[in-house]
Image 1 (tube, protein in one colour):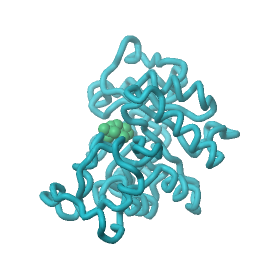
Image 2 (image 1 turned 120 degrees about the vertical axis):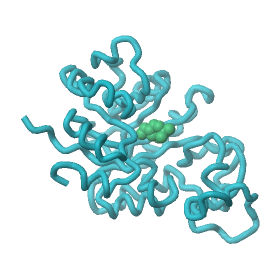
Image 3 (image 1 turned 90 degrees about the vertical axis):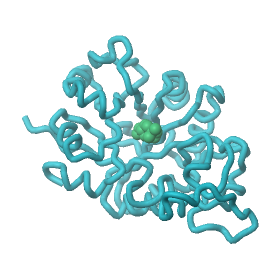
Length: 269
Ligand code: G3P
Ligand code: CA
C-alpha cells in the first residue's frame, strides 16, 4: 500500500533562506505551504519563552550574551536577521543597544503562536524545549502556562492539536505530559536506547523523533514504531535522497530547512 505523504515541518522556519527563528523565516515557510513549523525555546531572564536555538545569542545575532541572562526587551533591540544575509563575518560586532529597533528582533513564542493562530490555513507548531533539565522544569512550566493563555493546553482532539511539544530530554517530555496530558509529545533522539530500536518507546512519548542519520542506517524503524502505534518525526531532512527515503519508510512528519524544495521532492506535493 502506498504511504501517505509526510507533513512538511519548517525547521526554525524556512531557515535555509531566511535567518532562523525570525518572523521572516516563518512567514516564508507559511508562504511556501508548510504544514507545520518547528521552533526551539529558551527562557529569558524575565521569564519569557523566546525562539532561540543556542544557549547564547552570538551565532544568530549581532550581539553577545546568554539567553537566560537577557531580558526580552533587551533582545528586542538586537538584530537576529542580518547575520544570515552577511555571512560570514558581522556576527562578532557588539550591538548598539540604543539604536532603532531592528527589523528582526527576538521572536517570542507568544508572537509565533499568534502568527500560527492568525494564519488562514490550519498550521501546527512543534515546540522544542532546550536544556530543560538545568532549569528544573521552568521551560515546561512556562510553556504550559503560555499554551493555556492561548487556549491550546487541552485540545479537544489531540490528533489535531495545534501545538506538539518535543525534547531530547526524557525528564522534560515526562514532566510536560504530566502537566498537559492532551498535548502530543515527541521524544527526540540521535541514538537508540534500550528497546527503542524495536519501536518500543516510553508511554509518555506519542511520537518517535529520530535524526535522519538513524533512518539512513535503519529505515525499518519507522514501520516497527508504527506497528506499536507510534508515528515518526524525522529531522533534519534537506537532501532529496533523504526526503525520498523518509517518504518510502512512512515517516509522518519531515523537518526541513527548505520546505519548498522538500515538498517538490515528495511524490505528490
Ligand atoms: O527538530 C528537531 C531538531 O531541531 C533537533 O535538533 O539541534 O536542530 O534543535 P536541533
Ligand atoms: Ca530544534
